[in-house]
Image 1 (tube, each protein chain N blue to C red):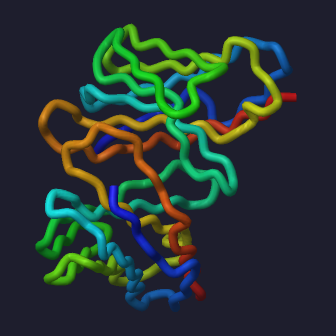
Image 2: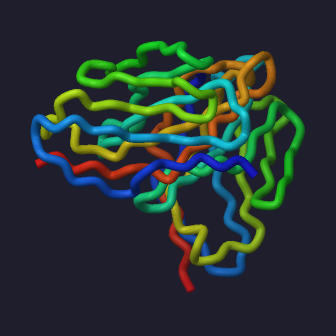
Length: 114
Length: 111
């Protein structure tokens, strides 16, 4: 079974704080993704990574950065949290290479920025 | 990725089979049909995917019409824990790209 875990289920931060969200997968997947999900806006891709130290911007990268120092771990960083970053953050991973690209999601982190 | 159309909501009695339809009339030959579900306040859960043959796993069965323009996800014995929003998407098998969920079908299981 694929297991994608996220460091926190719920997080409350203040405006201006630096926020780290961590995601770990245990299936040796090459690709990892960070999305945010908001009511009425669906799932939006923030960043993804197809290899260690590699990253690609998604649709809404502004205000976020990522880090992938190890294959199993993909971190999302909010450099200076703002209230409009209050959201549900979802991490996903997929096998990569030329094989199938089913994405498996973590449980999500619900972030509230005050 | 091809567009999909799903009914906004459905309900089903506990213990009965839940049949969730999806239309994807513009699907391309290399696109697969994927199903995910999302239980309230949790991350999306992968259920099943298929190309043209019917597929079955421990969670569900996927029936794809011969012309591939529609499909049905079947939960054979629905339980209260199957209450969720179910998303049907079509995408290329090897595409390491973002997933786009439509509005999905909100399935309610009644006791």
